[in-house]
Each structure stands twice: as C-alpha cells, then as structure tokens.
Image (cartoon, rainbow, N blue to C red):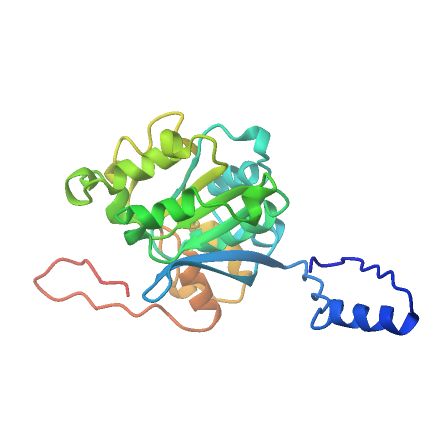
Length: 282
C-alpha cells in the first residue's frame, strides 16, 4: 500500500465493511517522517546468492553551508555551483572528484545527495571494480527500471576510489572496463537513461586517462586538495596552538585537522638516517 493512501469500503452491512477494512489495512504502518538531515541512499552489490542487489538506508548529511569551511577556497567555490545544479544544467554525465586521501571527497558527496534529493536518487556501488567487468551487473544497474527512473528522476551512481579504472594506463590493465564507463556516460549505453556517474580517486589529474577528462564529458571535475595553512589555522579556531608547527607550510587535510582537534597526530614513520626524508602517512 502506498504511503498516505486512502481506503474506501462499500458494503451492505456495517460489520462487513469494518471487517473488509480491517483486512485491507492489516499490517499497514505509517512511515516515520524523514528527518531533514537524513537522505535515502541506495547501495548496490553482487550477492553470492541473489546476484546484483540493491538496498537502501538513511544516511546523515549536513547542508553545504554547514560543511563549506571544510574545503579550501577554490574547491568551495567550485562546489557552490555544483550543489545548485538542476537537470536543466546537465551538460556532461561524469562527476570527477580527485585529490589526496582525507580531503573530504566522500563528505562532499553525502551533502551533494542532500542538495540534489528533490530530483536525483544517489546510489553507491560497493564493488565498482566488478561493475564494469560484469556485463550483467552493469546492465541491471544502468538499464533496469526502478522507482526513481519511473518517476523521471535522475540517478547518480557513486564509484569511490576507482584509481585503477581511470588512470592513464587503464586501457592496458582494465580491459573493457574503462570503455564501458565512458559508454555509460555519453555512449549508446547511456542514451535515454537519466544516469550520472560520480567517481572519486586519489590520483593526480596528470595520471588520469585523457579520455576521462576530455572536454564535454564531465559535469564537474574538481581537485579536492588540502586547506592552506592559513585556512587550517582558522578552521581550528584557536583550539590548537600552532606555535609547535603542528600544521605544515603546505597546509593540512580535513582528516588531519579532525585528528588535531581530538588531540592526536597522524602516525608517521620517522625519517631514517642516510635515507630520503619521505615519511609514510597511514
């Protein structure tokens, strides 16, 4: 039964009408009103027993205004426009967020799901490495009808940490996977489908495959980098005394700032004598 549905029973006797009404609504419950900060997100994965399967859950997501200061100025300005995108603004089908780990790419995507929820259903693919190598799985997600597309809504498929799929040597290592990704964004596979693909990667732009970043393919291509040293100090708001140099000259990632706020520092391997000064951030 649809949420908020009305049930009308016509019968020759009141007792019969009451009985039929009771049977019709047996087990029906009012769904709780969604909280403003919660967003319904789908999760796709291949089940060993059921094959391709989609489940949904409510995720917590802040507004863009609440998290905007978590990003360095150029990124925040680019995100300002992305958060306001409507179906009429869509020119490319690929959304690419790239940059070092811990810079807030996933947090931005959660907030994007909240900003777009009136017109776009966001689904996260939990096994993206399989999506473009398993044709049946790809067809189920890309072609299969669901409640969102039935109502003319757009869908955004999120593929996180897809470094191997879209880096420069992907054509040699990933076979047809990259070609199928591109086909879904602006090829025959994506024709007539209101599907966007969001990809996150830790790779530098220079290492990405040229076909991925060619003009016209991307709805947005944003490098999510560290906050500058000045921005990081402002973000902490005096909670950490920077006289000890806890924030380097090149700034800090969002993850590092949260660690500092908790009173911890990221673990690192100390430099070894006679070797390079390169450390290892875990």
